[in-house]
Image (cartoon, rainbow, N blue to C red):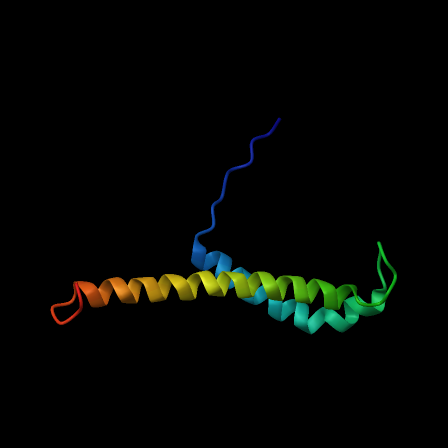
Length: 84
């Protein structure tokens, strides 16, 4: 069996991928809806996929926002005029 080199993504790569994917799905959503694909031929597959990726991208952004708030709070408490 051939070994595939492992590649790892850092948080910024995941964030970038989410944003690019969301924009690409936004552009293709009507076209995907028109395909009317399996498993349910209801004409909203593109919309459902877009909404799923939108929720995932929002979750990624929430993690970044929380990290930035946490870093800001730590920075304020470490500064000479900050609370200890």
